[in-house]
Image 1 (tube, rainbow, N blue to C red):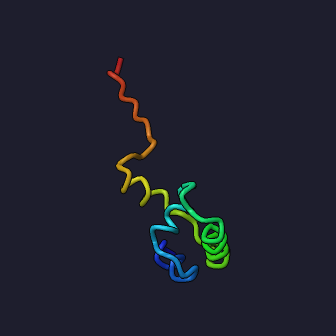
Image 2: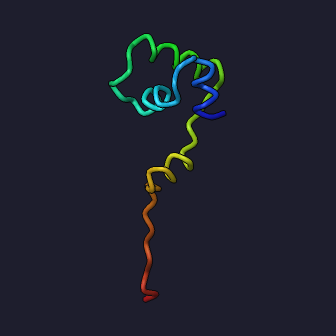
Length: 68
């Protein structure tokens, strides 16, 4: 399941779906409602690995010890 699938179901652009998923305020309430309904109908769950790759952040902290 991808943003493209949700966009197709909601009959909006992928950019609009992305804005809804990311919580942007730049979405009309009607569009937000259509997208949320499509997300629920399709069972869409954002892929955190893919999101982290595009943002180039993982949210992971690595600790390296000196072997005392």
